[in-house]
Amino acid sequence: MNALRTLVSPRGAVFLLLVLLLVAVTVLNPSFAEPGQFMRFLQRVAPIAIVAIGQYFVIIAGEFDLSQGSLITAQVIIAGNLVGQDDARTVPVLLLMVVFAVAVGLVNGLLTTLLKVPSFIVTLGMMLALLGGVMWWTGGAATGNPADSFREIGRGGIREVPLLDFLPWAVLLLIVWLALGIWITKRPLGKTLIAVGDNPRAVDYAGARRAWVTTRAFVISALSATLSAVLLVGYAGVHPSVGRGYEFTAITAVVLGGVVLGGGRGWIVGAVAGAFALEALFMLLNIAGVPSTLRDAVQGVIIIAAVAYSAVAFRARRRRGPQSSETVTDEPVTAPAPTRTIHTEIRGD
Image (tube, rainbow, N blue to C red; front, top):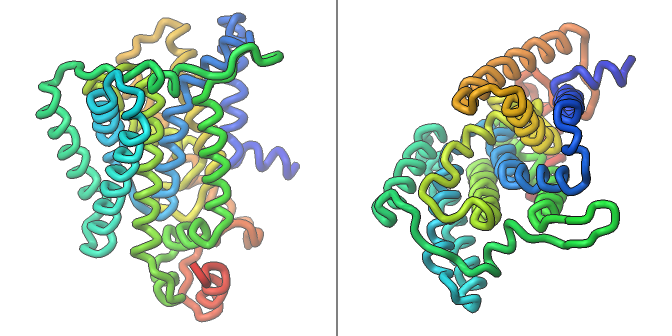
């Protein structure tokens, strides 16, 4: 009974949905079950899954990052134009991209936390600024052609792997980035981000540096977008349209993965599973002949349905009684005792 309840909960439902979608795709397209085809599917989803990991840390803290897609576009253009055909430029340009990502994350985080500007407005402004800079640089046309060694990061991999035949670098990078994300959630930073999303006032009473903690979430989000951009250069090319809409796709994946908008609850693995479920759904719709122009409508319906389902599920859980110690409480933390509890969890961060 407990296993069934977990499976239909907002945290577990995405895995059930993912399995059903993959089975449906396999039935309609049997070649999808072949190791090579399945690895290509994972390679295609890896960039959006990595972006979803970054978006997870921002949303779990109760914020939004709408600048991810434009940052991906900007980083793709930077890589395409600065690397060129000179392999010696690869490492310096990658370092420049990391510095640029950290700068964008710091601006987003500091404006949100120190000036108290809603993150929706801050990151929307950053999105427009980055997109405008890209259009000014490129004139709206494809430009730049990075060396094949740089493109190999996104489209290459280890070949002649037993059973799998081909293991893309993108999948390995996703595994590493997810492992790092899980490690962060177990550290004081991750626990504090959850506490900030659940009850920021209690975090302030506990003496934690809420502004710096939230800012680091935006930096992680920007770094995730940059890693995704490196992969997209490999097979999507260098064009101002690369990366557009990725922020909304990432938000959809995170919400589909059971992460609550407003922060305080969610599982990073569920966010990644949401990305795979979303891509599997789009693949299924494509096989069924549904026009790709309906993707935005489908994403909108998914967000509304997932948020509504989460709200109903958590309300039902509250009516059943106290939750386990592993789940963050739904009640505001106002009494001294909960404040001391949060203090012991995040002390030293």
